[in-house]
Image 1 (cartoon, helix red, strand yellow):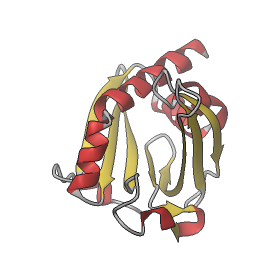
Image 2 (tube, one colour; image 1 turned 135 degrees about the horizontal axis):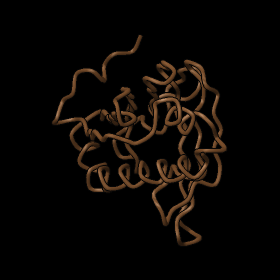
Image 3 (cartoon, rainbow, N blue to C red; image 1 turned 45 degrees about the vertical axis):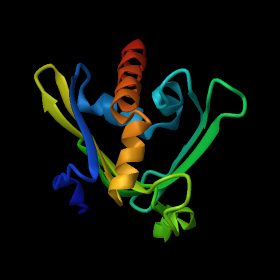
Length: 169
């Protein structure tokens, strides 16, 4: 079992916790079903145009995103590290599917940064306590992610998840 996310290091990690009016099962479905992810994953005005998931340890988590301008696009690929249905989802972009090291991060001069992310879900009376944690290799990666608007962006995506899943009921 992967447990590094348990030890928050403020100098390297970003985290936010929200109480969400959805049960863990719906949030888990939103995070693990490509047909759901394309509706909420990328903070508007960006949108997710493609998602592929191989939901197993070592499996792929792939997304393609399009910005409001045609030349703005981003692809992300990662590898699942831990899957506890309805409780905990952990993945990293530092590894490709099958635990292959991601060559994009061979040096720190690349325009992106490696991270390990977790979504933890705890059932509460009103739905779920949702904890998003992103661990970074170094303080520079953390600073870059924070400057990109981690809290605002991940918070906006979470609200989009809530709105979308509520509309499916």
